Image 1 (tube, rainbow, N blue to C red):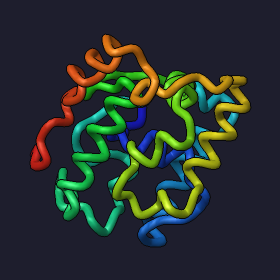
Image 2 (tube, rainbow, N blue to C red; image 1 turned 120 degrees about the vertical axis):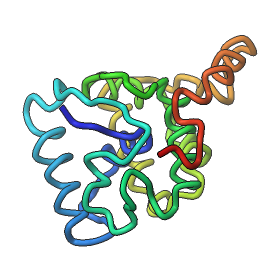
Image 3 (spheres, helix red, strand yellow; image 1 turned 30 degrees about the vertical axis):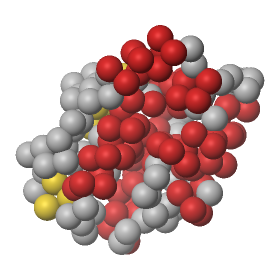
Length: 169
């Protein structure tokens, strides 16, 4: 089983061999290419965590269970947790995660990934567009923009999902 914090689901989807350091990139490659994208990778179980995870392990910005950019990371995790309906402690497969990601439209990432340095490179939007095409998801409306008011209210009520504090130890 792999441990992921919420924002790493879309990071894994958009991974194209770039990272913060050689060790980080090699680790990301091992997780994403060797496990998740390998035959049978859709069945890989992922435990959702509110702390550093398998991808964070060799990151030069990691400080124990936190990040030097913890405020930004906590905001990303909250946004991704809400958008993908993830909760800390939940276990899902990579295939189930892809189904949840496929419900998003690429332009949703402008909101969900705001502040991420990788967003401007377009890798994640392109990967999401490919995923949606491969899963034959038509232009379903984004929950945030187009959902009925009661759906948006439910989404807002679950916004924390276990990722509420910028300084969660």
